[in-house]
Image (cartoon, rainbow, N blue to C red; front, side):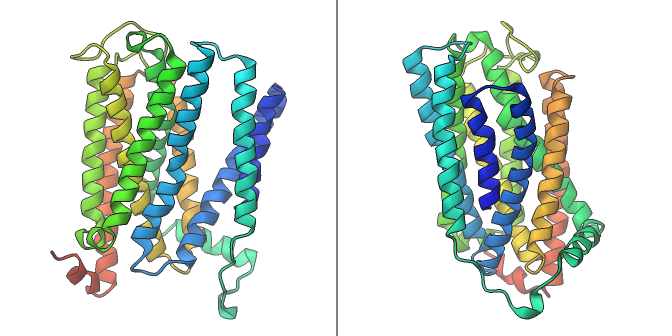
Length: 354
């Protein structure tokens, strides 16, 4: 986790002396750092949680992580409002923002380095060859194939709310002239959605566990589909490809509706990710690092593919693809969760009763 945070810092510091070669090289370093950071966090979470606390702790971890969206959004909004920058961002503003981000990444690396290491039992110690072999064995199991559909959707919808949707907000001229400030507002709303869902799931605790992950995921899927429908109604189909003065299917672009969509995307994304993390912690307590590594593999692969796909097709095609994968992921989650309950000998069937 410490190395992952330093990889983030190495990328961010490059904006203090803009160099194309350095930025491309550290972009790859950033991707590597993100993968080991999230794999490490997932494994650390699994090692420090019990079966009863995984849902609550996953929600709290995700909430703390997504608080950065609100803090970062507020910071960016203030900076852009003061500088009154519209489409072009002054170099001073870029250096100021990324200097702050770099310092925070270095501080995070220090915090990770000071975390107490879990106590490992001697019989659990494994060499790297065995860990690699067990990862590939896990990769080809029936359960992991079903989970791959879920992981893939997580990557697709992550690409949408982190990159494609903000692009739509920025390219839709009817929303306003200061697109940078609008992006900051959208970031704040997404963060509020993430934090609200995380606090709700963390506060509910046992009540959320009694309700069942499958019902929580059903709710998250419905919220996502509602957000996709609203997006089609509010944005023109060309909004993801370039500047446009067009309107949505039924409505003229509305800023408040756009911010509501951002909130819904953040809320549903939090529900999906916390339940995936909780499911992996409970299903693979002994091989959590391998399970989270596979999760990040599929998520990153489909996120990358979605960004490429988004440059070739219009917004409405993207929304149709997202909705289709959401339904497929929902049914895959139902199957995996029910199989896990049956494998536990029906112990959790009683827990999930109201």
